Length: 253
Image 1 (cartoon, helix red, strand yellow):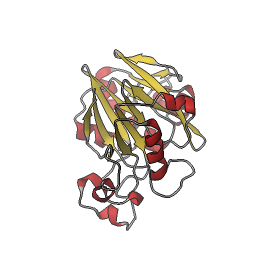
Image 2 (cartoon, rainbow, N blue to C red):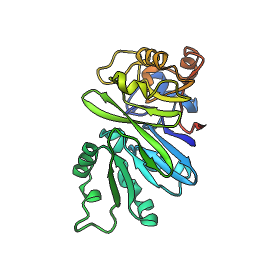
Image 3 (tube, one colour):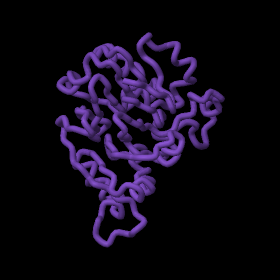
Image 4 (tube, rainbow, N blue to C red):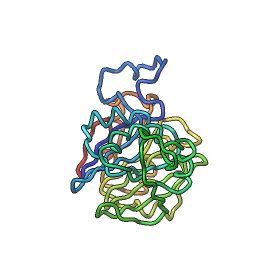
């Protein structure tokens, strides 16, 4: 499976609007971060996890010509606000399958009623096929997808495990039962927003502690804010098997 990091920034992205932090003026391409999302490709199928506000540009940049479905982690706008831009894929392919927990689908149907409401549908609107998923494994184009449930503030989030790979973003609290799904992975993608304590996200110290507990072979940190500092400097602080993800990074897992 090919994994492309479409975006690795937090909800504001980097550079941040109206912000004088030095990282926002970095000339290192790895410090330019769109809102968090990944592209998954295998056996000539293509899926994205989340459609944030930068979705259109991310698809153009990655040269994505077909979209077989969307996996949504949770309801927040930095993960969902770009759903309108699936329109060209809908026009070429028909309705795009959307996989999410039922409460997420309900939230999207309220916020984007013109997308989800099939009655009196405007001809130019996107078309989707909502598919409710639970915290149970399901098949997707021949692969077994295992949701991982955790919480981000008061919001339930689904991460996704596919074989020895798992994508876990926007995490603060996870149960011991769910942790068991993540032990001994080949590759773990995990969020680490900043150094200071946060009410709704693991900070860097807490993410590293979770990594130590789970013991994956390789880790890529994502959902990063400018407060963490420059990519080149932070990389030097991390354990040998922990790396910073960056936009357009490609992994073969």
